[in-house]
Structures are given as structure tokens and as C-alpha cells.
Amino acid sequence: MIGVQEFRAEVRQWLADNLVGEYAALKGLGGPGREHQAYEQRVAWNQHLAKAGLTCLGWPEKHGGRGMSVAHRVAFYEEYARADAPDKVNHFGEELLGPTLIAFGTAEQQERFLPKILDVTELWCQGYSEPGAGSDLANVSTAAERDGDHWVINGQKVWTSLAHLSQWCFVVARTEKGSKRHSGLSYLLVPLEQPGVEIRPIVQLTGDSEFNEVFFDDARTDANLVVGEPGDGWRVAMGTLTFERGVSTLGQQIRYAREHSGLVELAKANGAIDDPLIRERLTRSWTGLQAMRSYALATMDVEQPGQDNVSKLLWANWHRELGEIAMDVQGMAGLTLAGGEFDEWQRLYLFSRSDTIYGGSNEIQRNIIAERVLGLPREVKG
Image (cartoon, rainbow, N blue to C red; front, side):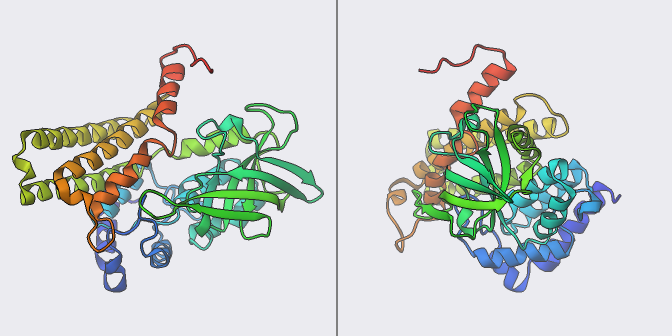
């Protein structure tokens, strides 16, 4: 296999050669809170990456990937972020469902779905959260019943990122009547383009809609599109979450560093840097970013209980606080709209409020760390 540094240089050169022409205009676009930006063009860019063999790097070669190590994938994401390349559109398929199918899926499921994830011609979303089961996945009530050659699905999912732009959804549903908590759940692959599915975008503080409500009203999927055995959905769903361990984290931090540097430049330009409190907060923010990077590097190749939860708390709180600093740096200018639209700092402030909620709220992360890592008593439910 090609060495990490050689691969890093290859990726850097490829991005320099290809982020040109029509693709150059996509630099810096997309990502959480900005998924609406040049979406179709970013799909085309992601497909261009696929043709160059730069998607699904960690997948085994027999499934179309390159079997690359964590270090290789980290190198890719770091160079990708340094090039300010547009945010990819295929996270749920490439990083979550694909590895899940490789680990738990049948040969037929792998043959049907993996190639279209690999070449970015089918996009996926995640059907976990529900109105009464946000971060408590074991409490889902969406139900599916077997009807001949199909599963018939009824229920509601919420906060479903990019459902309105996806063709498929991996859904955790209760398939055993009377079952409770972790038992009786199944992991189903459900087509979204059918009469029994209604997708309602949720308007965010920023005015955009990348989260959705998804309603299933006698929606159907083929009986053989259950991943793992029926009733074994909890194990498969937990497997998916382990694949979310983030090689992309270090690339994300490079983008955060770019935001921090931009905010420092703004503070210098408008004089806010002369305020000692602003200087202290910007300094603390910089040291927090270095601590985040150190933690990510130290835990990248090891698996320990709670490390993903700690990582989520670190970046979510850091980013939210950066948005708050940005408003204070802007001062009164942060309270007005220029041209009727939010600027990058206003958008950062507004959307980063959700960082501490989606993907598992701060409260849930802390409970997991307390109960599963520190061995403290479980939270008393009222």
C-alpha cells in the first residue's frame, strides 16, 4: 500500500489540479448549516471524487474501496480541508451505511447498494430519532409488520438530516409487537420515493431546512431489506454508530481553525481586539482547539468507552462558544442584516446552537460518560 505521506502528497496535488474551473467556485461551500449551498454542483463534485478513487477509502478493496488505514484517511480529510474543498454530500452512505452493510449485510444487499454509494448515485439519510425518542434510540415506536414479501412501516422520524435530498433511509423500527427497549427492533432499508412517505422540512434559525420530519404511512420495503436478523436491530444500529468514529474530525478541526483565524482578523480590523476580554476569549478558544486536536490524535487508533462522547462534547461546546465570541466581536453590526441575509458570523452563531443537540445532546453525552465509563448510578427518571 502507498505510504501515508506519499498518499497525502497525491491527494494535495489532485485537489490542486481539480479544484479549478467550475469546481473552483465551490470552495468552502456546504457543511452543517450550509447544506443548501450549490447542492447539485457538490453532488457532481463528489461524483468526480469517486471517479478518481477518492471516496470510501477505508472500505475493503473487494467492495470497491481502497482498504486504507485510519492514518491514510486522516491525511485525506486534512488535505481536503486545507484545500477548502466543498463539503461532501455522501456522509451517511459512505461513512455509516456502507461500513454497516459490509459488517452486517447480506451479499445481495452489498451487491445492490454499495456500488451506488461508492459512485454517489444514491444518497442516504438516517432514520433514528423520533419525537418521543430523540437521543433515546431504544424508545422508538415506529413499527413495521411483515406482509408477505414486504415490511409495512408506520410511524414518524424527526431531525432527519438531508431526507429531502435522499433516495433511501436506514430506519430502526419495532418489528415485534409488545417488545420494549432494545429488544424487538429491526434495521430496515427503506426507499423514500414512494406514496407512503411524506417528508416535511423543518425551518431552522438560519431560515434553511436541512433537518426534516419523515412520516411513514403504510410505507413499504422489500422483506429482504432488513440488515441482520429481524429483532437484532439494536446491535446493528449500535454498530453503525461505532463507524461514525471520526477520521473526518481532524479535517473538521482545520475548518474550525480557519473560522478562528477569520474571527481574529475581523477583531483586528474593527478594533474589538483591543478589548482585553475579547483577547482572552479568543486565546482560550485557540487553546481549546489545540486540546481538541491533541485528544483526537491520542484516541484515533484506540477504542475506549466514552471517547466518542468526550469528542462530541469538546467540538460541540467549542464551536457554540466560537459563535458567541463572534457576536461580541461584531458588536452592533451582528444585530443587523446586510442585504437581507445572514453573514458567515451570524450563521455560525445561529446554527452552532444546534451543535450541542444533534448527534446526541450534551445531557445524553454526559450521562453516558457518567454511567458507562465512571460507573455512577443511572439517572433517576421522573
